[in-house]
Image (cartoon, rainbow, N blue to C red; front, side, top):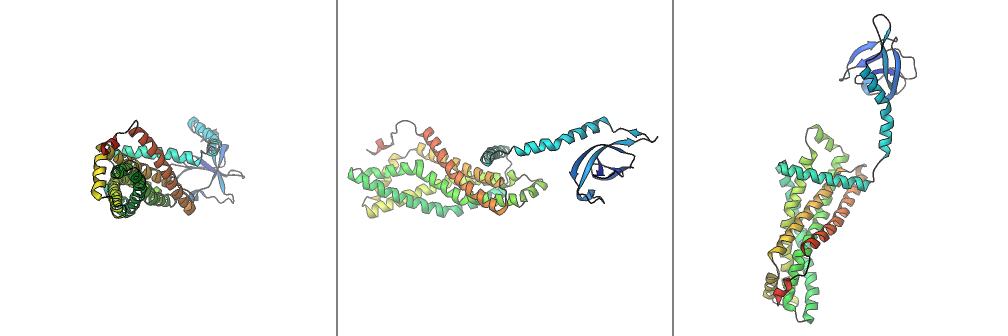
Length: 354
């Protein structure tokens, strides 16, 4: 007990002991001390009594004077003890006001994102962890992303060539394909790969650290988990997202050219020339911006869901699943917002194909 007095409950007070802030016994008062106010609290290991009860009381006593009379405790201590008497009821009332879990996690995600932006602006970046996470997000995700982009390009080539051939617009296939891939397909496909492969890994790893109290161990070592764990993952996703997007776009165009030449007898130079005339620098820029935003969103949501994990192994699994689902939904919502902002009005890209 810090600055308080301890006595057993349910029995006549045999005396009172006063402890300092380091829980050292500094004074003892005999049974002449008159107990005025008691608050029931659990006994800590260093406060065990010979009593068979498992609770103790923090008591406000009237200190005995040298003449044998009772000297009241200081006014400040009396007020503090009276405030402490009301504390349990207030805490119980606050504990009953629990927000919905989705609201709690949404607010935590926003706060965590703000902290990451603040750390990046201040230059508080753990470069070693950032490079390790960049290897996980980039090279180790490249194979899956390229394979997915290649088949997406071939599937859309089948649909475009089949329909455009009826209209005699075979020369426009490459341009339409390049616009579809750069503006929508490759940024979204890359973000989905990141959410499924990298986001789930982030949520599971941080969730395991949270339920096993490794986060608390970092705080004990005066290490901020946001600096050490979250910021490197967000930066790695922000850097790797646009790079993967460019590589996936190249893979999609290459697969489209290959299929059109081998199956539909559309020369490769026709596809490439059509794509070159349709694409503009603005399309490339918006595609990179989308990939950068998607990577940031996936990493932030996954880390926030990992940080708010509870409930042991079951909670880790639920947080991982929820992080992937929320990341996918957020990708499509953000994609709509960015597309609405970037591509309003009538387009003029296909006029270049005439």
